[in-house]
Image 1 (tube, rainbow, N blue to C red):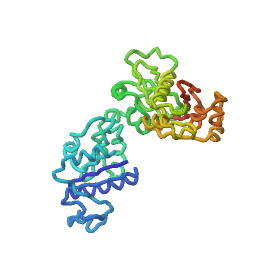
Image 2 (cartoon, rainbow, N blue to C red):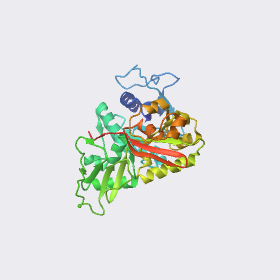
Image 3 (cartoon, one colour):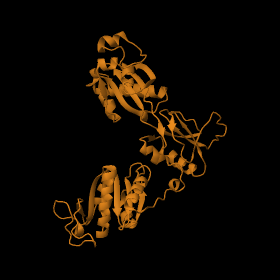
Image 4 (cartoon, rainbow, N blue to C red):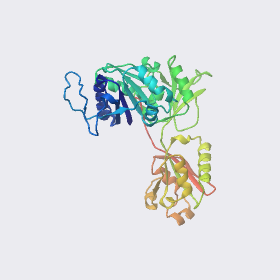
Length: 371
């Protein structure tokens, strides 16, 4: 995680140092610190060169260097807002709001923004409390600083399940942010039905109830939560949380263009009601490691492809679709199914062939934890 910490007074500077210690120890965070030039650290070293010290801190040496905030600031705050995962402003809420307001765009992309008063008595998440993690980071900071975390999001205040925060922590993709907003509003009023393709550990959090065989109680405006790799929607309105749990095995004829590979993969996933966002890995035989079409497809979806030797693929256990022709070329009777399974536990789509491309999909067994 990358963070920028801003402060505007000497007292605030002492609080900011404590914040940096927490961020580095708890999150292994890369932190840059800034203050007005009049109290910034001079030179290129560490420590505080300013002649003014808080009572009891005279001559104290700190390992945090504060750089000067330029005046006028121009796009200074915008650059940090776009580049960092976390912004901490030690000072008033008003100062922070004025600095970040021009750059706020979306709860999906905005960094977490936290305000702490200069005495460190209150820690206030003001932006991206759930997806950006500002609420949770605020709680950690408040506990360490012996202060109060001022959480204002309704689901937290009412101790209801916060779907976007939980999904982010678990590395799951939210199928629709608009649906997530409707879900958050609904869970404040009633328990919502829940379904998962994976076993879960621990009690369901407040606001979720497991759906049974009888779904007669579901009406047309019922919204439910489904943890799945599938595109199916079992509720009248379904919010899906999609874990990265699927492995894609691909084989292809030499020189097959990216567009063809992409078309075959997309059609295979569509035919089997699989969400592309659940794909965590793309695998093939090492004979294809320089195949431009395959590499281009993987790059397009920001997945680093992995390649395995024929001997490695032979060691994969399972019931595969053999091909004497493939074996004569590659040395192994099946590429796509074995390649998919080498990174997962069970096949959910066996070999599908079209236009010189073969595709298979396997799922990695996992457990959902609400603890």
